[in-house]
Image: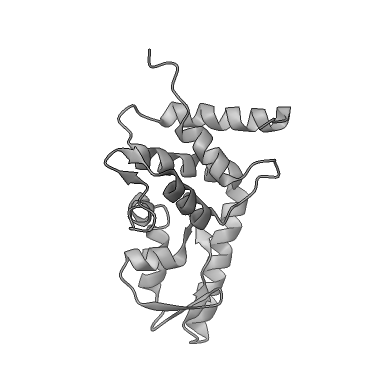
Length: 181
């Protein structure tokens, strides 16, 4: 793939950030999680995240005040976890109707639990280890499962470049640290 100067600079800046934080002891799952974290940090700035939290808060408050017990299933946090994934992790029953979550009761403790777990790496790790996504089998990478996981996780986000989320994840996780020698 031929990249423009802007695309090359974008990838190099992501690789630099990735290599600074990637430890030699990281397995493939750790590398994928770190790649997702680096991409999301670069792709969504602090103002964008601030508005995501405001939107989530307003949706939650209206669901609580009007006793509809319904709020939006948006992505929040540094890993951009869907609210439904957080609720799964918290073992809370819900129903998804279109882009909304319908739940038996909405209260302050639920809001605080969701907010507290918005950056929980274990939720992403549990998602990766689901059978349909498990792309690491006895140390062997199953590339089509990795591709499927990234496609489902990211919704195939594009970066206004000639590449997508999967391309960037692969570029990051297969980047070798030249400072190790």
